[in-house]
Length: 269
Image 1 (cartoon, helix red, strand yellow):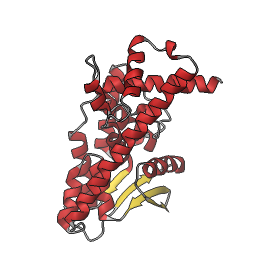
Image 2: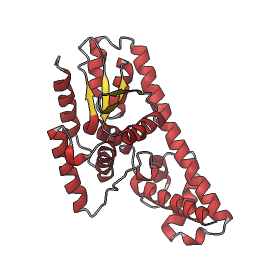
Image 3: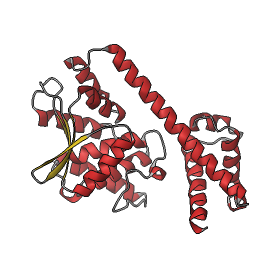
């Protein structure tokens, strides 16, 4: 496709067609769309229909979506698919991308609100994307013009098709660079996992130092002990190391509850 709008539409259709199975990921798509735009007036009809469909599904499970979502809220990230879901939501709400076969690579995120653009820019920067910024008419636009960066954005969002299109167009010709980027992404994921483990361990140690571990129920106490015993393990590995059957999402939820309790007690002191 040579037309930028039709290529963008095809990418959005692929995102919609491959909706994450997990409810937490679908919720984060909704959060990101709501944080990026007024979803009652989305300009893309298919994106608007998709938003309403997901909202109906999530509401049916009696799960609320906050009116002013904080994209950087780590407590909303329940599994490895939640971060890619946020990128998808942002692009579905305000994104457009040129066909990599065209001369000029371009990914635009166009916000009607300066505050929404500020929040998205801060979040994207925190996960490693250096978007540039300009004001175009009444819109605040975050943009990338590097084929490599555009490919990485969509690879992180779980839409490898754009990365392959960029590669095939000749914008990325060095296979070694491609492998290096994927390696760096793996390292980044490992760092996020390590940071999450350290945060949980710090919370558990704080509760222990304040003699507050008794506030945790039995299952949370077992999870806290397991996390301290194996701080180097990922959640998947930690689930395997558990003496009782437990899923990765369940572990993540329990650790999040422990962290929230520790933060609540700290705020009271």
